[in-house]
Image (cartoon, rainbow over all chains, first blue to last red):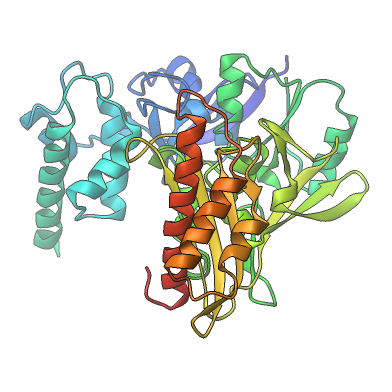
Length: 162
Length: 288
């Protein structure tokens, strides 16, 4: 089986690797690039644990072939904290919006994508946006509160910077 | 598995026509990758259509309709002002498919070719009178969307044929459409019944109508009887009752884990009535 040469950027870094034609982006991130923050939950696009953005669009990395990422810009949970934790990460800790933590990277990536599109969402908008991210521990309320608190802080910072 | 990235539909059709084993086309991949993982489908040839110029574009046609590329994902349809203004029913159907993540990839063409009788985007396309262009080894042809599904998981496309675009007709004046589905929760589920209505008013009267039902037959169906029940009426209670009865009559569902036959028949009537009202409000410029 001939491998496919994939050239992409992940969290701003150019990367190249050889992918099996059947290999998902999720498997390539975890097994080839050692970026194991992105989790596999269901592997069928139902749980959102493998959420990443590709050219700015939120997707399940299990529903995409690694070969399809050629020439694209991929962002994963590893790219979220810069010098310090992202406000969403900090607020998830403050609000105890995680217990086992397995779903958390996907939810953080998804929530970040939401706030980039809509900095001031309603609770309902947050719940619908995150409907594809399953969490079996928290019951979701703390997650919604953490996202809203982070959103409020980010709006404040934005105003402060302007 | 051979992964192909043709740069024209003619090339894609030529690869498909020559393929001797299991073949799949790849647009958004939200069904194909799941089937591959589950072992239901092990393609020998996978043809990724996203390298073909124009597949990610939505273009207005000279007559005022919309030509939608086969790789345009739901999230782009939902963010397209012109399409949302002209065909809100088509867009809301597609936007009900899966999660935000799935919306980032899933396409109208994929939802149609996956062949599910419960496909949420298909009733809206059929009610709208959408047409697909199909490219095969011997050139292109057009098919109304309702002619594409052949049964659960099956289409009427011949070997080597691939959908190369979807075209919505011009909306024109005084028109409105709507898609509603019933699921037992609010999000992330498969339609128990779906119904789309598209209509045009002439004054207060319904001048044209098309009614499509999902998840109540082996394919999404277009009901001429349901359309006739409201054409020429002012969509009063009598007309809506006749529409519900016609929709119930057109529904030929099975009983399964998502709903019984009797329940689905009743819900088909209820949704037809509600969707017609919303489509009418939109035609009058009152709906959102």
